[in-house]
Length: 208
Image (cartoon, rainbow, N blue to C red):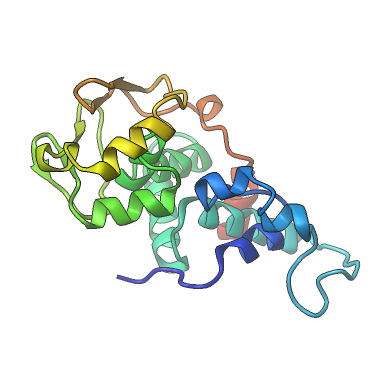
């Protein structure tokens, strides 16, 4: 399974804003973008005029980095979104939001999407009672995501609940904190996706 293995803080610096890829570290004074707010590399501090294509590319790269997906997988999501009825950009964000690792993060059951991805890979979650260890698994309306019975007793999950349990849960998800399970009520509206992503620029890029 392909995944990005480089320094994730470089990604935030390249986009010029926090993408919150490292959980609690992003809120501390150790955050790389707080210490070096310019792009990485030899020419990171130089001024550059950004073209229309450059703006579109940055929008796509930012979305990829938020959700932790690589180019080929992101392109497949775009193709799926384009085939669905409705606005392609909103469809794309809904598909990305419905990834199991993202849902786990949104529920507060992981401090970051990277941690959620790792926990899913290790088989700590179930969907409709069946263990799923594929981070890109797409949940649907009515699905029930839960922490597996064996994992609930671990110190790891006790710490996760203590540190992340207070995070607000989106309206399209319904979380039972006592049972550590949640139901997918519906797919999110664009207004409920609180990420700084300009999906129209992504659509323009792929439409060329």
